[in-house]
Length: 483
Image (cartoon, rainbow, N blue to C red; front, side, top):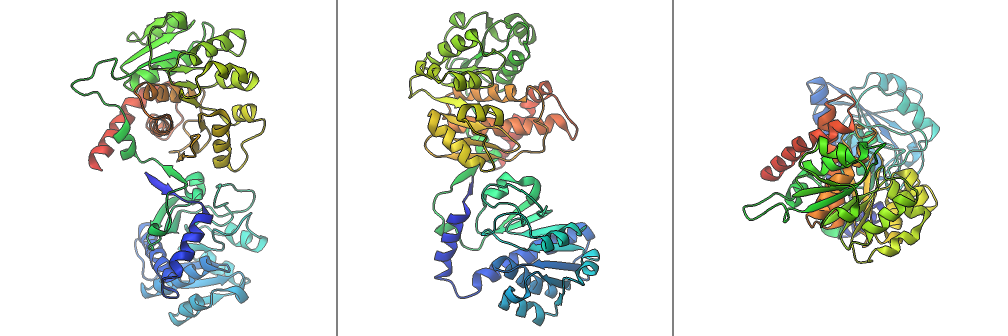
């Protein structure tokens, strides 16, 4: 798993490392790594490095210093480097001196447009991880004029480092080069960061345990249940699906099909869409009522069940069965309106809630806001449940404080029924005995990958995502074998 640390933790670790490192050494390490990445991008986009033009947008503080030192290193590669100093009186003195010694040029704000227009690459060294809020007008004007690829130093300026939120002018980078450790912005704002490259400066031993994590495909491969010689349908996990209705059977078909493709040992469907589910998925054991469903090792409940008295009693029954439950869609609305329904649940029995922003607002009485990490953590504590907060980036929080972030592979999951597919995946993993936080995190990864494979660059449907799950799992297994 990739570790991610808050900026407060990273600043504290940097202070500890700086105390035992020769003056300026860390900045030069970072700048050399930055210069290497800028040169690599030049080679990729223009076919050469020497003779190309780089413009540095330099603010005050260490990010500006990193950019200036990187400019000095780029000069050694034959790159023509010009630096625009947004606050000349606060520019990093040692970095500026190094750039000038190397033959780099300093240009005024007034003259900067002509240099930016001719640039092959622009380096964003405007602000660092201590900054909050959008770009100031002079910086925003410069950034708006850039057509060349942008390499951001540590993070794109104007994007919040701990939430990934933007509320005004900001940089959208082609590549972000960060130092020592990943920050939340790199997972939460992929569309602003572009490709993220981590440069090791020796910070890891000073960091401690991560604040949040990001599963890689090899991590998913390590936990995804694969049948062995001694397994049967029961040891692989039996998942029950309580979803859909006779009028709206789609949620039942999607959640059930997702569980089938997730390699659940057996899928039992219980509800008014039994005939439709059985006709689409003949391997499913389908009945008309949860009381007739038979034994299961986890339940999926909520998609399309309605929010009236029947839906409430269905949810209450499922919660009272003493097995892990993934509650989605209408089930979250019922819980928000009638929290007493949770009294049917043994507090030690795992529960996964999967709200989108509107459902979160109903559950918590407020919108998630820009800080979705804190929002998910607070909901997890309130409901003593794993909370998967849907959105462009999916955040999964456990009551014990563990948090994971799933960075999407495009926006292909923004389609009706996509959430039902995710619920089926999580339910099948719960039935196989996975830790609920891990089940939700791994399910979100495969869901995202299946969406990307189904789309192939164009919009797809929830049914397409279901059909792509086997292909996604093949990719996951290949990643596991190669790790």
